[in-house]
Structure formats: C-alpha cells, structure tokens
Image 1 (tube, helix red, strand yellow):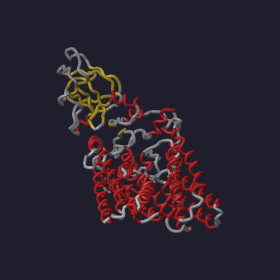
Image 2 (cartoon, helix red, strand yellow):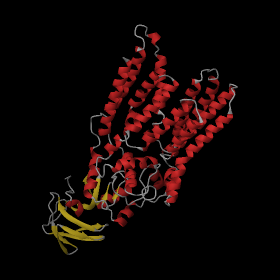
Image 3 (cartoon, helix red, strand yellow):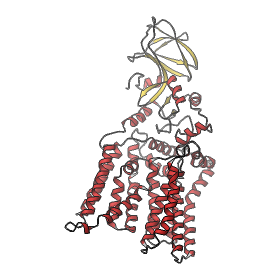
Image 4 (cartoon, helix red, strand yellow):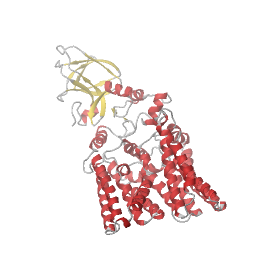
Length: 546
C-alpha cells in the first residue's frame, strides 16, 4: 500500500512540475542565462563579448538545445523542460544518499519531502545554472557517502566538484564544507584512539585534487587561447568581490552562523564519542557538510539568494525523513503497523503542496508579461539592432552597455568602480529600444525624457507631447538626443503633418541631434507623440498596444 502511495505522489509531483514549468512566473535570472546561451549559439564569446558572472559550463551545455528552437518569445518554456533531467538526477542522488545512510524507505520519502518543499519546487523549476550545480554537488556527496571510497571514486568526485566550480565559484563554499567535515572526522577518530591509515587518505586527496583541477584548467586555457582570460577571471571572481553588497554592508545576526557552527562541531566531538556503528561516521559527515555550507553561506557570502539554498535543502529532507521515521516507530501503533509514520510523512507532504499552491497556483499563468515583452522586442527590432535591458532579458539582441545591471554591478556603481555610462552608450550607439526595469534611477529619468512606452515594459525612441494651451499655432520645441526617422502621431493613432525646423513633412520626418521646432498644419493641442518610425511601421502605437 505504501509503495503505491509513493508512486502516486511521484506521478502527482511530475504533473505539477509540468504545470509549473508552463505557468510559473519567469525570473529575470532565467532570461539572463538564456541571453548568455544565445551568445554561445551565435558565436559570441562570454566574458569578452557578453558579460556574465557565472561559470561557462552550464550555458555551453545548453547551447545545442537552445539552437533547436530559434528566436521564439516563449523560449524559456522548452528550456525549463530541458532542466528536468537535472532535476531527476538530483532527486536520484538524494535517494542514493538516503538509502546509504538509512534505508530505501527513508530515502524515498526524503525525495518527496525535498521535491514538494515550495522553495525547492519553484527554484528547481526555473532555467538556471543552479540546476546543474545542485545535481553535481549531490552526486559528489553520493559518491563520498556511498560505497567504500577508492581512488577512482575520489577522482570522479573531484571531477564532478571541478565541474561544479565551472558552473559557479560558489562551489568554494562546498569544498570548504567537505574539507572541514573531513578534518572533523579525522580529529574524532584520533580522539577515539582509532588508527588512521594515512597512505590511502593521501591517495584519495591526490586523486580528488587531480579530478578537481581538470575542467577549471581546461576552461582557463580555452579562454586564454581566445584572449579572454582576464575577462574570464574578472567576471567569475573579481566582479563578485565588492563591498556594500547585501551581506557585507551590515553587521547583524547573520555573522553568528559560522561561529555557532564551529561551537556545535566542537561540542559534537565530545557528545558523539560513544557512537559505535560505522554508518554514524557518514551521517555525521553529511550533517557537518550541511551545517558548514549553510553557516558559511549565511556568514561569508556577499549576497544571499533563494537558489543558494538548493544544495542543502535536499540534505535537510533526508534528516527530516529519518527523524519522522524514528519518531513515529510502529510500536506506538500496534493495531496499524507503519501507518503512524506514513500518516506523519503524508501530513508534511500535503502541507508543502498546500503551501506551494497557495504561493503560486500551478494552473495560473504568470509568465505572459515577460513572454509578451520578448515577442514585442523580436517584432520591433531586427537582429542587428541593439536593445538596452538590465541583464539581457530580451535574450536575442546585443546590449549597448557591457555590464549586466545586477547586485554586484549596482554595488560597483555605488562605490564608483564602474561608472554608470548607460545613457551615454544609448546616445553613442543610437539604441532605439530599451527595457527600463532594473536600470538605475538616473538612467530611467533619461529614458522617460527620450523614449515612449510600448507596453510590456518596453520603450522606443520618441516623446509624448502633452496637452497644450492656446490655439495650437505656436511652435512645439523639443530636443532629440538620438537621430533617426520619426512619425508625428495623434492620440487616436492618426498621422499628422506640418513642418519641423522649416522643413515640410507628412507623417514622418528625419530628426538630427539637437533642438527642434515643430509646427502642425491642423493646430492640434491634444496629446500627441513623436514616435520611432520603425515601431510604427511594425504596427505599434505610442498610446496603446497593437
């Protein structure tokens, strides 16, 4: 009966996972990652040609899949489905770890506890580097905790951990957690006066270190051969080390996590001295890895995001499943053996499902706005056009400003290590299309003065001329900062005619940089717009969506 319940819950999990992949709101990080993948597909070299402060492996592996779909506004949806194998890989690793430390039953329920937890469910649904990072990390732990460690297994674990480093440098927190946990185990054994054979231990470290170095060195040599090594190092490491970011800008309770973890580890040395079963060594190792990753993340890392929680949430689910199993042993339910445990676990799973549905109903589509924005971008521009957005969320177009406007860039704007030259770059490159969301306030003010909204948070060159007093025969004075062809259009969508700087126009006119004087033939005083001609020709209007 319990097995069929587990099967039903997993099939239900697959169903809601599909629903969330289709309908869950699109996170800006997903679009940033897709922009970098597009760069690989179109021959642009990340770090040199496209800014990115993540490792290269994930985007490179996704490029062949991305290339199958071409330029489509809903590209994030199929790419989310491409993450399903990584999600299943992660869940299988959770099962393998739980089975090795406890039992298949505890492992199976741990998978469901992790998979239905809202933060894990939502974040693992998104298209992001952390999907691969989490899968690699959990695989490393399954190797270290599973069968007896050999040099070959140590090499594979190191290789996977090195691959995780080429996904994100946050892997350094994991390496540190594994190292601390390993040292703790050695001290624990020494305190118990157990004999440690250092020769195989040294061999494991050498094999693991060799595996760890392969992929990071390979990528370093690749970017060095392309003249982009400095950019590779800057984007992955230097750019992300800046004061005045979230966790480095204040001194509060988060600084206590690491000291508390150290105290807990020291206390554990004395309280666990009597443990005899060999499996307890592996359980303690995993608990220490989880504890020190969490503590180091909360204490040392400059910014905290929910995706950083992915590596430890499944590990907590393993311990939670074990705790529920041992806390609801069948002896307490003599007339219905095992049902007490099943009921307790089912309550937790159902509570997680209910919380997830409350936070984001799976059948409620929440991604229309982002898809509409990408569709509008594709419609209003051609491939050679530049589009200014915060982090590449229009995906398929080059940006006139190199840096993505994310947390570290904003912090560097604040300290002055990166000048905010976005407005200047818009003028220098003649960029006609922008997405203001996420840009600095000073840049938004420039956009408000020189661009007109299309809807879906997308703007094109132009100006809204407000209602004016008088008879409408007085000239309308305005400034143009980017040259181009424009139409003069009424609020009702009718093309207007007249003179600009003494030159007659009928609907459209060419504007150079500088001050201009506009006279309208009909003396109109109602709202009107000077609007980028290319957008008008593609069916867009300044006062309503097409």
